[in-house]
Image (cartoon, rainbow, N blue to C red; front, top):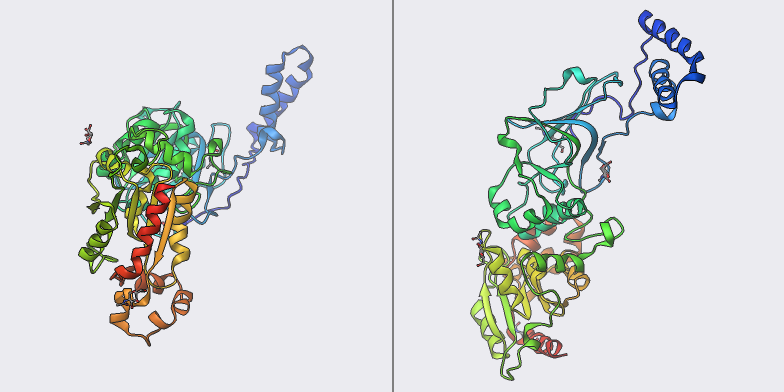
Length: 447
Ligand SMILES: *[C@@H]1O[C@H](CO)[C@@H](O)[C@H](O)[C@H]1NC(C)=O
Ligand SMILES: *[C@@H]1O[C@H](CO)[C@@H](O)[C@H](O)[C@H]1NC(C)=O
Ligand SMILES: *[C@@H]1O[C@H](CO)[C@@H](O)[C@H](O)[C@H]1NC(C)=O
Ligand SMILES: *[C@@H]1O[C@H](CO)[C@@H](O)[C@H](O)[C@H]1NC(C)=O
């Protein structure tokens, strides 16, 4: 969490100068005439008394700690009052105490507000809790009525799973209840991200998105949150979300954003033609975890009565058109990987067919995609490949722990697990072994 000066607890600065004593006496004097004063004056006097006598009454209670670094996913500073942003060069947020409060020491935090903090640092933000208003830069733009969220768009974005897990779902959950009355202040600005998800951004904010990296203004807000709460991997915890929102509702929301029909049966069931084949989208991967025998895979899919759409999604695809294409499919099939995030565009009861690479990584296949498919009211079938279908066998042989002892390799931690089973592995699907899965899928679609 970077350098953190002072404790999180604020301390009143007792001011017992001669002048203060004089003022105090004056106040006590006026205190005697309370009986003839109205109640708002009484309030004033009590507040003033609290200020000068450092009493621990409710009125004098310190401002809550503004930053919380305890969550495993996101570091957050949530501020209400007088907050000012400065962007160029170093992103800085000033929290200005009210004029009647002074703090002993300035506190500051320097951290990456990426809402998946264990994974990938982005540009840092410095949040400064000032001693008093005298050190604050003067506002050039006053946006005091709209709350603002400050977050980065770099990190692992560009991978659709991370686009949704790290940014879009947390941002949606924080913003949607505000009915568009929120401004986004972005560091590590990425124009492609705003273009790609333009329809979502337009739905959750009515205001211009600020590129803080290039900002010459001092923007003043009355509420600003740095960082975004992030519940879980590609998921939502209804207990923490507005309206007990969940992934099923989120899929419905995404469908509405991309103008897909709300809740219709899968395309195969909607089509009255008896010879209409169910449509299967097969994800081509050109990098890691690709099919070494894709023509054979294509052949077995088509042989089993599916209409095949072979595709490799690209970052700059027109998402409206891509969503429509996914919506027209009954099955999404692919090796465990980010392309499966597109299950968001499927219809209820459509099927996700996940090919799980070798290495006893079913737990992760389920954690990152499987349970979401179920929560979203989709169907799913997993196919775990055997050692013979993995390029790791050719590379390491039967006697290597990577093949012989996946549990042992997994137990060594994420680095080894990722290296072997996620990054070094390609798939040669045994189509004989795989074929029954396509038969079973067809039965499910007809149910
Ligand atoms: C941030 O502060 C606002 C205003 O006090 C509050 O409504 C909101 O729940 C807080 N959010 C978080 C994540 O702490
Ligand atoms: C940025 O913040 C992280 C914590 O999020 C910290 O570990 C790192 O040292 C900071 N980097 C710089 C350059 O201050
Ligand atoms: C994406 O495609 C839709 C539908 O064809 C079109 O209306 C929209 O303008 C396109 N968006 C971009 C950014 O090209
Ligand atoms: C492919 O799978 C079938 C059925 O499980 C099995 O009999 C066959 O040996 C496998 N082929 C290879 C090359 O592993």
